[in-house]
Image (cartoon, rainbow, N blue to C red; front, side, top):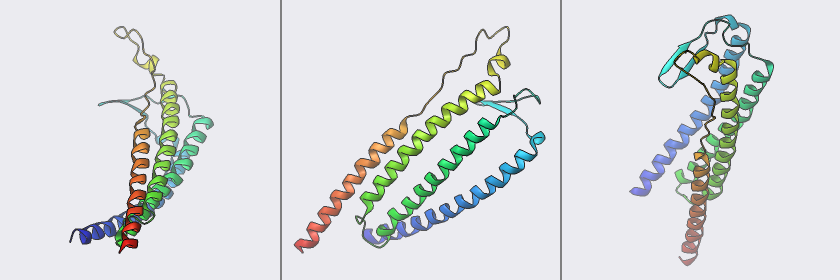
Length: 193
């Protein structure tokens, strides 16, 4: 009975990740269309700065115009991130495929390792982009000039980087070894029978 529940859940999750894969592709196409629309209608953009629970709507012209370097950097980030996300979803779908057929150890260790490497690559990509975007926002919005007044003496920039992806990578990598070991035990059990 437990095995049947596992197979049924794996079948459902395989379908969910397939749908998410195609939704991501459709969303990417819509994002490109929306991005092109924004590029050709910049006067309709309202700049706002969010500082925790506080949102500041800025005057027109306060933010420096966006240069081609920033646009190229964002596009490069998205072009690098999209294949990683698609591979991530496709790998999750592939992990649940053998489970849905009643073979939970077949190639799952290798797929979990692929998931770990995708997590590591996307984590480093996010760290680089976060550092770049935070630095750009500090300069583009001129936050030091925006917040300085008679009550605030100084405004400084200290980048924040989340390195939790290294922990996720290690856990996924160790989990892949567990599945490889389970596959070996399953083969030994089958050979014994």
